[in-house]
Image (tube, rainbow, N blue to C red):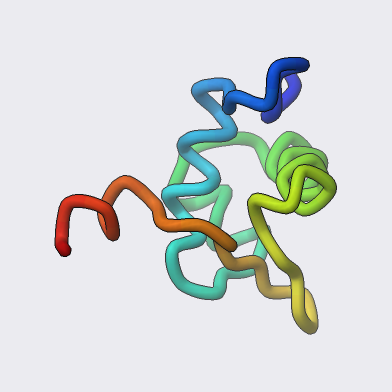
Length: 74
């Protein structure tokens, strides 16, 4: 289950993870927020970082582009 499709779009799990990191979060926090297995979250977060959709600092991940929540707030 990849988080980023070949065309650069996000899978449903990728969307869920990206939504869960609109503020810095650990993989464990993302797993709790999304209901996804921790091993899937860890690999998914690596996919999101590789696709430049997230950054990681000291074990915490954050979205690098506006999330759905941020887009509708403005």
